[in-house]
Length: 336
Image (cartoon, rainbow, N blue to C red; front, side):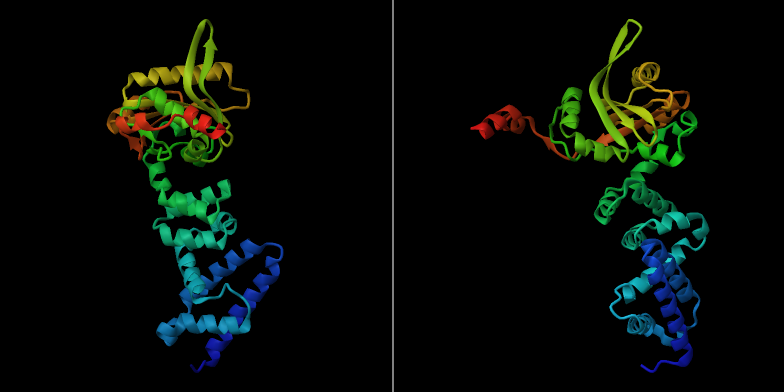
């Protein structure tokens, strides 16, 4: 195709910008390239050459840029199209989010552009990438697990009860529902069996809870005055600087569950919480709940509390469960 002079000059200016970005990239690789792609998207969005070259515009632009920058992989038609979508997506808030954008690798941006349709969802995953140092596979798995959507349905009072904790961090403490797909329990499991299975698969449980959680123990003994109690599961959230106590209920949420959980959080605050720690968070995870009732009950609570559901994917019929070898039997067989 015959290239006109104006288009040729325009492509040359883009090529020069790319070379400048490459030079700076020796020190700040990702940030400079992200800025380049944003600028490229802006130029494409505003140019009149799209109308002139029609359906061959992206291919022609890519070919001309590659011709001027041989052995460069970042100037394909696909990347050019992503650059345009990248600019369109963030142009209204670019100054406010530029730091987040330049800290996120371009490959991650492409996934977000493909999978996230709202700005709120994009920013949610950008925060996760930066805070959790997520790989592309990690990011895709969280998107497929509908992590953003599960984060939006939570019932908690963190914004009122945790004023010193960053709202973004507080919001990431909770999910609804929690997905316990890594467990396999019998049909008529009880609370003890569920808790035992969660602690047996503690690494998977910690991944489901999210970034920043450290496991403290199961049925941790708490003593206040002459009264002792045992909380189901105790964690510490490094980012929120607070203990997180989790109470598991295998049935429907009931208002009386709150009294027990508040007793744990206040006792931990009185006995374990350090001077630099924030208030202890309590999370009640139940099989199901009435959202209207849960919101009403939590409204008058001063302690930071969240109420959520859990889901199981692998329920084993009782007759099958009894035929499965126990852990002891498997260990004995392995020893032989």
